Length: 144
Image (cartoon, rainbow, N blue to C red; front, side, top):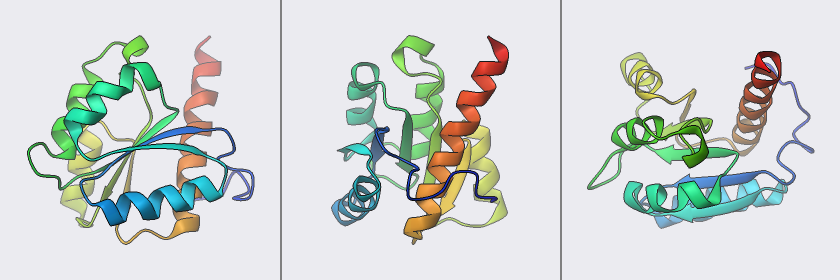
């Protein structure tokens, strides 16, 4: 992916929702994103994420795919069924150890804009999120 925004400025002030059942992953991602200035909220399940999403109104959501009870594919389909004011159009990143083409396509078809492989490189994650939000915001500007 081509770098559009310098990593040192990328996430200052962004509100990011991280959905992952693994506590170590949540802590790691929070540490990486907060170090770049993001305001990070973490939840351990799709159900918890759906509960906080409408009120939180994050700029982006990062969601693990392989979670018990409800996986990331199901979660993002439910998010995409929400209205815009409830968070239905939030830019979303699938974070997964499933790295083959089939899983990448499945994530995109489910409603994620980006598929990032675990283990994630911190700089790649920051740049990916910043570019995604920048792209979404510029596309909205053209539609106004």
